[in-house]
Length: 102
Image 1 (spheres, rainbow, N blue to C red):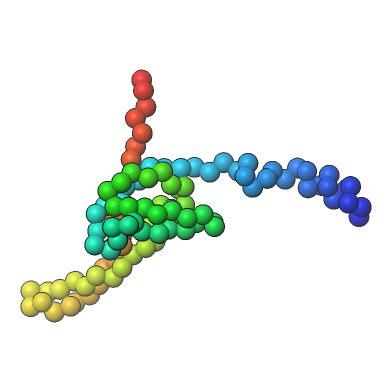
Image 2: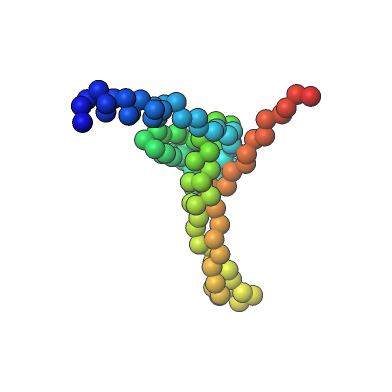
């Protein structure tokens, strides 16, 4: 196959940068798990340093990372014995909804 036909075949493929990526505004809740300088997150070769209590605009994929970052916390009975475990989010967050003007 010549380089001209290979070029024509590939011309229908949109460049990666043209792909539309959705963003969302979030706020990480205050947590002793997040250092004062912020918590590092990475997605597809890009990085974000998110600080607790500060609004940030991030790709929707960061929400998937936050939803999957869980820790097992003990469930205790009245005698303070561990009877099981339940998962909790390591980094609780809020999604900031943008107001739509009427």
